[in-house]
Every structure is written in structure tokens, then in C-alpha cells.
Amino acid sequence: MKILIIGGGNMGLTYAQSFLRAHITSQKDMMILEKSPEKAVELAKKDIGTVYGSPEECLNIADLIILAVKPQDCDALFAILKPLVNPQQVFLSIMAGVKIETIANTLNAPKVIRAMPNLPAQVGMGMTAFTSSDDVTRIELVMVQNLINTTGKSVYVEDESFIDAATAISGSGPAYVYYFMDAMIKAALKMGFSESASELLVKQTFRGAVDLYNKSDLTCDEWIKRVSSKGGTTEAAMNSFVSNKVHDDIIKGANAALNRAIELGKK
Image (tube, rainbow, N blue to C red; front, side, top):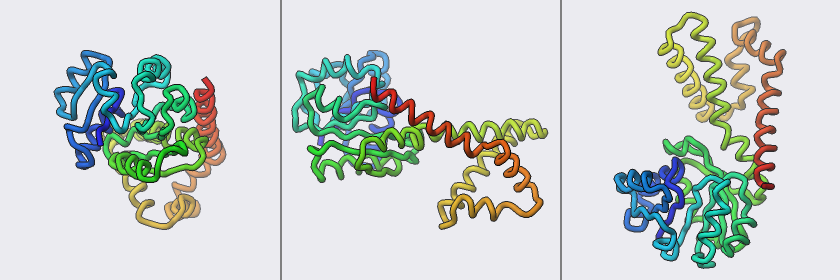
């Protein structure tokens, strides 16, 4: 199976490296299309496959085409690709907000899979939600899921609207975590810890808490109760969070991300 990744940015490069590292494909079957000559030169040095500068050179020999470009660039890209597309080719899009119907109709490409990965895919700890058009076969879907899983874990959703929801939760989610971590680091600094000690305290606390959660069947609320004691320090912090409606604000933030994802899909 020959794979063409259109776009050699962070996610395009992550996919190429992950596929090769997992031995799910080989360098001779990996192709990258990159319009920037400077970036193409840098990609060629990484030994991750053949780098092309024009779709005429590579599109017709690809079995799977991964669209890893910015959504605002899709109209210009589609105009170039359309005359070269074979209806039997499978397209995997990670462009936020661009609907399956738009891709299929614009390119005359009935086999479309839409996915929403997130940044931790770069270290093999990503979370990806994906869905597909009806023309994608079961075998093709499993093939693509195996590729996606080289970057972490994945979940298939029947309804495409859940891709927007996944964008708000797992796609944007790492930023929410970093936001909370940043607040805790700044709190530690104000308490007198050094910068390195503050970062270590917070990083290890997050790592340990998530690992503990993953290795148990307890809910977040149950873990909070285990950490808290009556009249103790944790209870004081949680009471402050509740009175300031931090929990509600996080939910509102996620919904704001969802609404923006829906808006982007209408453009």
C-alpha cells in the first residue's frame, strides 16, 4: 500500500515517522507532498520516504492520501488535486471543520475518512476520533485505524458531528491541561519554590494522578474523595473551586470550542 501525505507539517511528519517506526509501511511506499521547497529539503534529510513538490508526480500512484494541511488551504489544494483523483483511492483528512461531504463532492472521491487527532500523537500518546463515508470498506477502515493507532489510541464514531465534539474535548484538550498546569506552577512559584522545583512538582503530580486513574476503576469524583479529608487542605482547595464555579467554567470552555468547530465547518 502506497501512502501519500499531503503537508509536511507537525502532524504530517508525525504520521510518517509513526507509520515507519511501527513497521506498518516502508520508506519506499511512503510519499510526502510538500509545496514549500525549503521544508521539502528538510524533510528529505529525515529518510521518511520520497518527498515531492508537485501532485502530478505522485498522486496517481497513491492508495491512501492523507490530507494534513490547514483547512483554509483546502479550496486551492482541491482545485489542483481534482483532475488527478482516482475514485478508488482512500482519503484520510485531519483538516478541522472540513466535512466528508465537502471533500467527497469537491474531489469526486467517494472514499473519505475524517479524523481528529491531537498533539500527544507526536509522542505516541495521541487520541484520535474518526468516522467515514459509506463507500469506505471494512477492510479499508481497519487498515486506516491500524495506521492511526501507531500514534496512540482511537475511537470510531458513527455520526460525523461527534468529530466536532472530539475536537472540543481531545483535540483542544491538551491546551486545557497545560492551562491548569501553568496555574499550579505559578502558584508554586508564589509559594517560594524555584522554577525547576515548581515544574517538577506539577509535572510529576499530573503524571502520577493520570497513571493512578488509568490503573483503577474509580471515577474522578471517587479519587477526589480519597485525596480529601474532612477539614483538610484538599477540601479547602476544592471548596474554593466550587465556590468560584471552576468546574462549570471548564465545561463552558469546552462548549465554546465545540461551537467554534461547528462554525468552522459551515465556512
